[in-house]
Length: 99
Figure (spheres, rainbow, N blue to C red):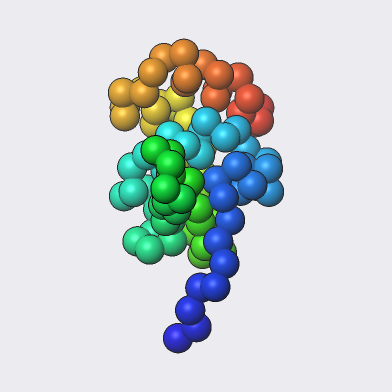
């Protein structure tokens, strides 16, 4: 099996797949939303850590988003169910593509 030799920061992934960074941060806050081992935390000695994704992690994010968007209530319902901050939900929903 090939080993992962590089990962993508969450900020870059948001730009790469064209979604709101806060949306990805909320999804990444629950590791059960992404395939095991495809999302990692990079520590650099500061108090902050960077969330990063493998190629498969990016695919997993896209699959997760596609699934959530097809559910009744879409992104809003998902985040309300997960008790996210209402202000964050409003910012995320405002940037969601209209279907």
